Image 1 (spheres, rainbow, N blue to C red):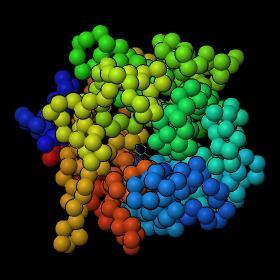
Image 2 (image 1 turned 180 degrees about the vertical axis):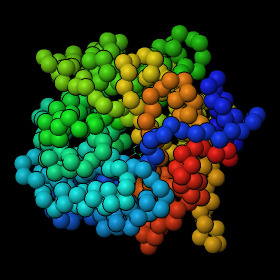
Image 3 (image 1 turned 45 degrees about the horizontal axis):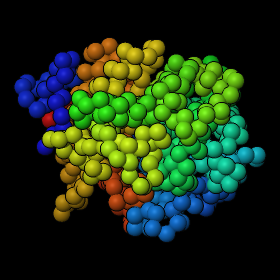
Image 4 (image 1 turned 180 degrees about the horizontal axis):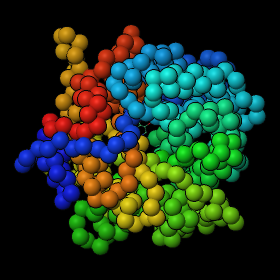
Length: 477
Ligand code: IFM
């Protein structure tokens, strides 16, 4: 079963009914795929890398499915050259990866570990030799444990340390990196990590999580400034947010209020300070029983709103909510604990249990375009986990993933036709990898990884994506 309606007013590719046309993308549209350091690199204790909060979290019994860890992961640290060759064969125009802060600064501050930067220099140079643009994310959740021991993102000082780290990476690689991302999905870092206890560092303090959200944004702003001074005017800088349209299950006022609260925490709490220079007032009111927000100081809003060149959107699924009695489990939604989440009826789900709704991608892109000051956008993550099957010849047949990508790309195309300034699309993920608390049980890759042998095999969806890139157009499927 395919996802929801893909024939929006502007979409000229009706995949569920009606005629099917080839969807051509603008010239110079950037086609990419992504990974992150902890999810693929492995080599956790090599060449001077310090421990990260994810190393510590994974070591807690019963936290990660199967007792998995990122210790070896997809061994990208040692196999990066082969992986770059794989990217070349897929025709990728760009590779989005993250640098590991504890590999570069094992203590999170002070001296830089030269071997850490050397690795990323080798990777960047290998990409450039293959004509693949390096898109570098500075923070994809692997905070140095040493900084967590000093308060983690709850400590204002962490934001300043993040700028030092950005400066170190910018100075070394600034002449070669095509685009920078400061923080990836700060909602997850703050609320899954510090309120729900589902991600590292595994804390369950909602007030602290709000403070962390602010310090992540402040760290972003300081890092933008540090990159601009280290790299100069050529730096193209973004933040990456996980955004999702939020709708109420019914027209009841209580459900609308639930939707407003979740939209506030998930979307507006991050988009508004970045693009409008202020926090949403309703979120501050919803959370005033937890905090007086005194962690926001003098010039912070200005720092956070430091001008950006791009904004990255990670989109996976829509969010559908209803008012409900609060559960006793720690909630990642401070001030919106009395809300339950629903999968919209009639929509298929991925192996993560997430509803497939390409239309949600169109909606979130259009909202950014219509409600906020103009900024070029890119889809920094989009993709799906499925329980892939490998046939007797070793071929990975994953038609659902190709359909998923097709239908979301059709919506990206529709968004461009509706005037959205969309510059690129990155599949999550290039490789099957460590899916956080799900360990290696959930596979998002365009390329299958056999974790026992570390053998890579492009899936059918990867080959389909290769053809999309080659044609700069989405075919009918
Ligand atoms: O694997 C993650 C990634 O690290 C961040 N965005 C969502 C992906 C799928 O859960």
